[in-house]
Image (cartoon, rainbow, N blue to C red):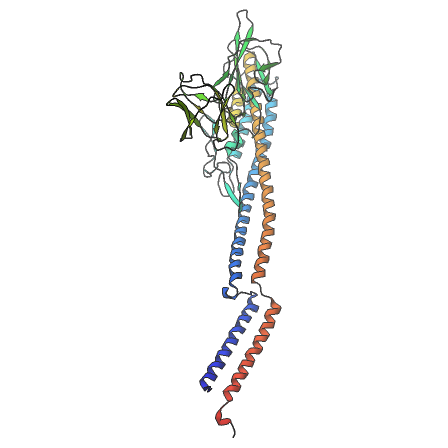
Length: 516
């Protein structure tokens, strides 16, 4: 086999270039500290590092989001702490306002103090974050949540949007609560009643704090209206009307009951009683309103009279609080289809199929599905229909309205007028009850904020562990083993020297240099 001089040169140069390239690769590994200079070095590890780097980047982004959430929640917590302090001071002022020795002038001064407190509360309710966004406006951060009209009445102008921040892969947290929830609603699970007095009462009757005497009472969660009338013999009597959250009458007006001014408590039907004193006048009226509903739905209402047949419609009930019909209006229509009675549901405008109806008998229940049922028995006529609607308590819990009521009462002269003084005491008692509910709600929100901050701290701890794990995985895949790399560097250097010496030796080889 003949080997040409060109082949000698080409082979030598190619070998030297390969050794130089490998040596350069080792230099790059040692210089950068990375095992993979290009994805071709380890394709599988390169793909894994991309996924891990993406997860690590998301982890950093979530950490930044959590810091934003902590800042927002911290501002909210500080603001609500100030609101709690202010409300505590207001409750103290209202106790002072109940002092019977105060003159009209003293009450006028106290009214000015409460007006200033209302302005301070308004300022806190319209607090902003560090970016100029209003804290409690929901999604309408550029708009103040509470605005006063020309008469001083304050109303909520924001929305009910939740400012959710993604703090982890599968977790979102509210970074701010809405002013509607904080300043106009009761705490979830609250079971309080609030009293109101009708404008224009002429007697000296004073209604006190209601209590639930029987938690399982039939009308717990309903509204009670007391009306006083004068009997033919000049004595006073009262009757009670019970209404549901939609203001439909559940019971009453009851048969008038004689009123004894030595009575300290009036027992209302269905599990509620209320403190009462003084002597009302003919036509005086009072109400006892809940801040809660025992059932999120009103009593089902028949749509048209004369179509009920033998049907008896009762109270709706909840079988599954997480059911798909919760918070939605359900309309139920009946038809006679060739002698077969059927019913059809329409849920928030979406109409379902017709279903055959069978009378469940006395005490029966019609299961509407979606977590909702209604007491129903009998056979309705063709065209019968009823609806079930969700409601919330109708009691006014706007803290600013409560302050307006007591400020107006404080400015009204009562000296020498027993009826006016009784009305003042009733308004004062109602305002204190409402402030108690508002204070409890603020404390509930503060507790919720603290819980969210604690959750963020826990997520941070888990995130730090994950970040360390990601760093270790990336180091395992990417970082070079310096002992191995340096040994390989020395080996490749020796190999390059050997290749150069071999090339030089071969280059010196010539047939003319060979001796015979």
